[in-house]
Amino acid sequence: MVKIIIYAGLSIPFDEAKEILDSEGDIEVIYKRPIQRGDLGQALKEHPDIIAIIDGVFHQNSAVGHKEILNVIKSGIKVFGASSMGALRASELDSLGMTGIGYVYNQYASGEVDSDDDVAVMLDSESLEALSEPLINMKYVFTNAVSQNIISEDEKDELLSIAKKTYYPQRNYAKILSESDLNDTTKEKLIDFIRISPDIKKEDAKELLLHVKAVVEQ
Image (cartoon, rainbow, N blue to C red):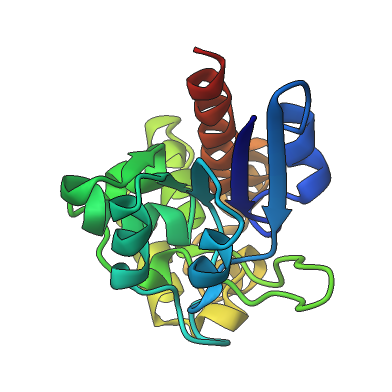
């Protein structure tokens, strides 16, 4: 029996995650709410073979610590990270045994982003629904919008400057666009592009789940 513990619920809802990776046969998958400090100590008591960190708390409670993750790795458990808190911690601990996956992880690992503010969102503590838009998603969408000639490089820089100055619980596309100097035609085109753009944090979460599935099926 292979036991897997996954901390998620925000970047990807549990029901969607279970469509990719769920308990079956000799695999037991346990989904838990976003990780916070102290959770890994309890997780060790469940004797998992793999721990995957997608979501975690940043400001609401104490974030999961580096030493906690290293203790898990030293115990022989494989630890994977992606999307949000998992990507951040993986970029800091990849040389020490934590495996990072996806776009967000690569952004941190390459130094393109270096702040937890880039992935932080306000969330509904009960439903785990995101109530704001993460900066990393905005950066991804606006960069792609430049490549599609929807906005210019200067317009992207303006939008990101406004987004960075906005406190993360209040960060959303409507607010950022309303405070920008983009003309109405450009705004409309950008809004249409935003609507069809992927949620990069969710895509990374899916990639992690598929990776873990592949690992246990080897």
